[in-house]
Image (cartoon, rainbow, N blue to C red; front, top):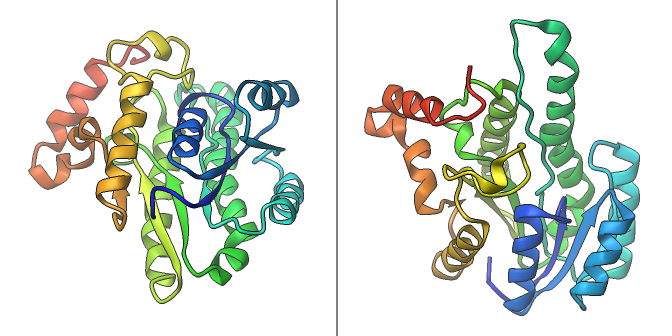
Length: 254
């Protein structure tokens, strides 16, 4: 993925990592469209950040995805980058089925079905472009589990394997598949995470991601230095220690 000259759609970018990356990519010379459910947030982004396009989309709703895709492609026919950013994270106690089942279903719908439906909606268009990129968003927790968030961990592991498989299928096309693997970042993904000492500052994360995209335009996985502790525990042979350290630092742990 070249760092500039793209037309980029980022559903799930009205706050947090998504919005931060949207603004950074715009600053690098890209046309950027953000998607989200809440009209007031989209209106605020339009007002505060001239040049950013906005589209209403609910990535838990197949019909909304189809409608938004039609709108994006009609307004931005040069679209060549899709970043499947939308995601949720929930603390769950699986010892109490009545307390976790609805949460788990919501996480899977948003974090797994959402990206699958988004890719399905745009893949024909992207394959017709001479140079296109799908950026999936997994997590360090795809590789080492946080005990408090089972469904989130599983959903991000699914996204990792989806990314690996898509890359194989699309190897002979013009579509590159990149997987962004954030560590904990200071956003509102979980209550209290915005001020967590354990989490990486958002601006620092975004700056490192942009630097990696510039240095490694052909990378398959975008990994800031901080996520490598989680990503490579099994390869290093210290997976058990990684899991122990991760869960000892978890403010939502058991």
